Image (cartoon, rainbow, N blue to C red; front, side, top):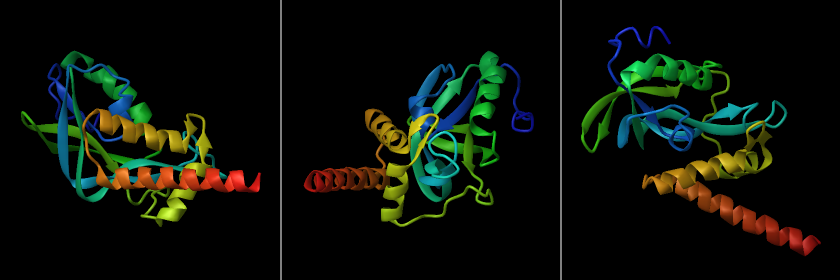
Length: 194
């Protein structure tokens, strides 16, 4: 954290980029939020979750920013005097396992470019999940449950937050459609066997 703040001038405001649960549960105070596009990374369910949305025996998956493409998300401006406290909370939330790499990256917003702190996926981390087949992903999402609740709830909550924020993610929308279709199939087959 100190390394990431090495170039920060104390008292100046800082931008943080959110692409997943930070959009619907930032857990820090901010002065402003803007729609922002980040180039070079895309939103992906690319990290195994053994505690929050799964267990070691039945892991779930959570979002990370994986290499390639671009991602529409939200940039949050944190007041300079609140940066130390906000960053301390962010580090406890995002960095306990080493799954992410903190980087200062340019984000395009409707009011110009901002340099924001972005947590990108560490592909050498043991919990990194390369892209898995859709059927397997659906099976994992429906089957996992951790201390913060079911994996399906996390995925749907993120999709709903993006929709509320008018952030389009066609890949996630397709996954949500597939999950809803699978839920309908599961319900109808359960009724037939009952």
